[in-house]
Image (cartoon, rainbow, N blue to C red; front, side, top):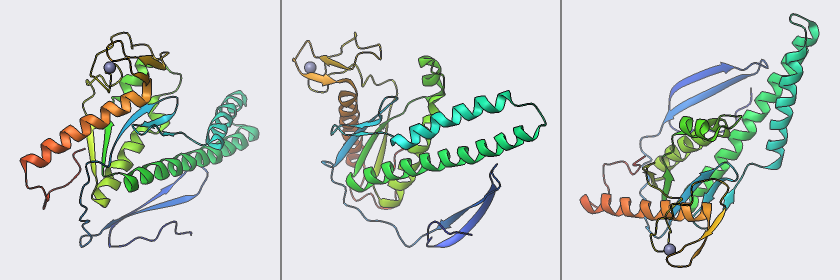
Amino acid sequence: MRLLKVCKGKIKSVTVKRVASGKLYASILTEDKDKKPDVKIDIKKTVGIDMSMKDFAVTSDGERANYPRYYRKSEKKLSTLQRKLARKVKGSNNRHKAKMKLARLHEKVTNQREDFLHRASKQLIERYDVIGLEDINLQAMSKGLRLGKPVYDNGFGKFREMLAYKAERCGKILVKIDKWFASTRLCSNCGYQNKEIKNLGVRSWGCPACGTLHDRDINAAMNIGKKAIEQTTLATRGSDASGEGQSNTTY
Ligand SMILES: [Zn+2]
């Protein structure tokens, strides 16, 4: 058995899972009560994140995080293996072999995805104090876009989960932005609503009101960041600014 990470605190539960390839995985849930991080939130360190199919995540600082090429490669290989398996005769030895091969690759792809998501979320939590994320309806999104593969397969949901617990653990703030908020159509500079930005093909646009040139995703991320600042300021104004005794995560 290989321990992937040393854990601190009192062990609450251990879950052992056997995956299709036969390997065993154990998840250990611990409780670390004494370690409540006391972080002074700097509102200037706010970032907005726009989730996109093209780049995975785009930040209001203009950075794009995407899956590494090797992950996309294994993903492609996975669908090839799936097709191959479908052609094998049921109950045959070849089918069994193909199944095992597929299971092993599946596991590899899952691990690669988790690894990327962990890294991407960790980086954000380390660099920023307030993180705004759009509350997207993943199921509706995958239906609406009529994509061959469900959007939640892309790891959006997992990413959100990771950001939430990492923010909690590090005393940072994750702000959920209402999904009806039209981040894509709004000019982040002047607030003009450009109703023509509906189809996903529009990658960049110039604001007819103030003339600012926008990258579609960065502009959306900037709007999400602005909204996150707004909501955080509202929340801290209403209560003790030290936030004692309450969770920082509004997500
Ligand atoms: Zn404008």
